[in-house]
Image (cartoon, rainbow, N blue to C red; front, side, top):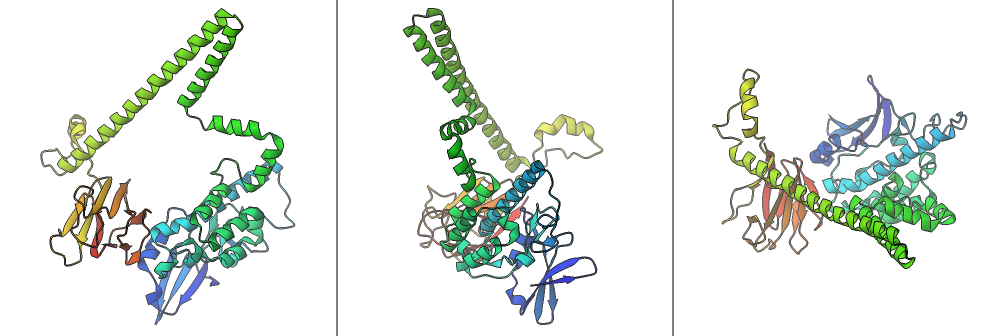
Length: 426
């Protein structure tokens, strides 16, 4: 890649020999990413080739010698502020590594990431990190964390920016997990760097053992207890004190501690029952609302509300429903005994050949009894192939069983040997 200055800012540019290397789907995913780590690609076609441009105005490369955060001549700030900035940088870097693995859920290979330190950018404070991800086609076998490249990642982590943020143990663990294609370990280390785990980073773990391991472990356990569990602990302690008071012939303290234990225990059980009842009520209400939205959202009997009829809005607001975001599977294959269209309006729709296990039944030998599940969460759809022998593809790329993949409108989904076009509609 090259860095060039244009009339409106600075750009990182990658030239491609053929436009056929570009992947429109990958470009849309990168441009609409929620992690905010990837610079938006802009594609320009030039004759028989193409050029991907990434604007990084306002940011500087990690290897810039004038980088203010790690410049040798920079005056040090207060120790408290340094610790705060280091904490923010660690969390940002941990989120960045976490997003590397999450690219796989969108069928984007980590091999598309540009890991050259000269092409990775940060703000003058070193808090946010911006990286280039080329929207190019990749081989289906590259949909794994090892395609990130252990050598490429190690070269990146050896630059001064990362040396001041992560420890050598964390660096070696990240490189090892990529080399061994251990995605779970990679996510674990990324979570430790960004502070998700229980204060047990490689450096802090040694310090905790030197101070007071039993006390720290007990404190951590107490912090993670729920309110009901804490009440039960207090009730048990009160019972123990009541027993000790009885052995010491102290009747009044024995009675008080025993009464306190009974009250706390009874209260915790009642609160737990109330919480379960409240949760069931909310779930039932939501199911009723969704059913009503499906049945009555297009009902002409429901009055239309606009700015000129506020009295209708106030009197009939309880009868108005917002339609659910619905998905749709349109058959592309020429198959008999299979409907042309299937609607997806439930939070969880199962697909398979067994009529007792599946909401959408596909009578086809290549389809497993429970082949896949399509889930809907806040308007976003996910495809999760069931753990079995049946094959599932998204855009002709095989997907891993038991793992959820986000699917977008217009994508081709293959269940066994049956091809569908997925779409969404309100």
